[in-house]
Image 1 (cartoon, rainbow, N blue to C red):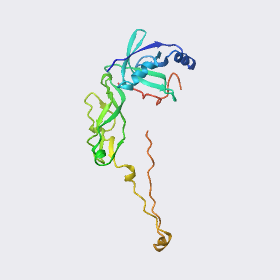
Image 2 (spheres, helix red, strand yellow):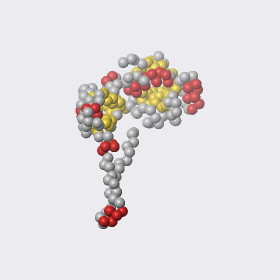
Image 3 (cartoon, rainbow, N blue to C red):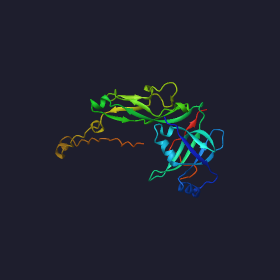
Length: 240
């Protein structure tokens, strides 16, 4: 894993005008947070932060923030992007202690094609796409890779089946489903029978028509100095 060092400048002013001036010279505002310390306002290069986000570990990358000749080991706490073009507007950092556990979210990646898809005609339903874990900063996984090639039709894989070792603790309940192989929706839904003609209905005593219920379609789910949560990165909390 490459080591990143991000140069930072301290700043005393805040507000929209200050942020515009920073961006005009290729910088964005940010704040460094640390347990038991005052927050420090900084300015950093969005290109440097973008390179970190594109790395293998992405948002969970541990890197050095160089400020006033000193390096502070940090992780991205939150970041904010421009809605239309996706340009970085703001980045917050959290200083970590290498001997204290962190609580972070790690993305899940599926590996292999299930038997239930290749042979039995099913489809993959990816239910849980990231997991919250607790571990030391140096032990944060880049991602959690799950082999699903053995899954048959109507079979699932749960959190309890993951093998992450002793250094990483998953906070989700063991019975939480990560992925399962299901029958395609079109095949799973019952088909309505043809309605009887008026004459036949009269002879049958005008029986009430059958109502077929269909489920609802599933949906998947700027303040300059303090971006709203959800705008970029979920907060990392130090486990005390």
